[in-house]
Amino acid sequence: MAKKVTNKTSSKKILKNSIVKAKKRRSDFLKRRPHRSFRLTRRRDYARSWNLPGYWSFANEVRLLLWSNRWLFAKFIALYSIFSFLVIGLLSQDNIELLGKSVNQLGGNVVAGELSGLVQNFAIFTGVFSGAFSQSLTESQQVYSGLLFLIGWLTAVWLLRQILAGHKKIKLRDGLYSSGSPLVSTFLILMVLMVQLLPFAIALVAYGAAESVDIFSDVLFTTMFWIVELLLVVVSVYWITSTAVALVVVTLPGMYPLKSLKASSDLVIGRRLRILYRLAWLLVSVLVLWAIVLLPVILINQIDLLSDVPIVPIVVLLLNSATLLWTSSYIYLLYRKLVSDDTKPA
Image (tube, one colour):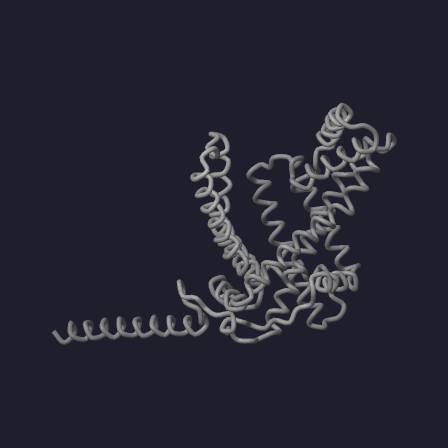
């Protein structure tokens, strides 16, 4: 009988401790989140300082960091490109040439001369950038390419962390061997990111379905449809803003996925819109980089002596590696700017 009383007392104690811990977690969460749902917060009450250079200045800061360590990162791009070629392969040169001829014939019937060539080059660039010429990957290739991306991301972040920590004589080999410890944690964060993109995917599927049945003739329905579409996109964008920062936070030693999501959410509160603008600028910078490099290469590849050489696929392979390096460097430096300003949420 005494044993039953002891067990009952122990159960009550465990339940009481659980309730106390839950209340404490809720209290701590509310302290970190001074704003409440469905309650208007005045601007003076949510301003949170964040000293950050302008868009061009920040992008130039990333460029200078990469350029000052150009030989190290050149080896990174070369090695990542080699493994990408072994895993995925190159773009189809025949499809690129076929598209160029088709656009050239169509453009010749509409416009003439240099404008037709410009349309052809732009069409090829759009197809390459959008991945229209990418070959379909097998299941094993998809797994290997995802694993390669994770290792490339972790290696780039590890190298950047060592450089900004002031370490000298950093080797790419050390990055490859030492950066893989948070591989599983980073994979889980990516899975969270995929889930957060579901509302955006639903919006795309809904748009395709609505367009196929031609239901946009009704003004009222069209208005409601676009409101729902906008809400779905906003939800995804709201979520992934902090998750992009969590991809860097999770690479810290001893950091767990849920803890990194919590820390990144605390970092971006009150700054989410400004971070979103910076991420949008990242996409613009990637597009500009591809245009500056790829458009002249497409033009050079149209020379008769070089038309059979897969110049465009090789350059695209290198650009994919450079894009990974640029993106990881940009997000990592953005994260460092967040951490350096430890202003509490307003």
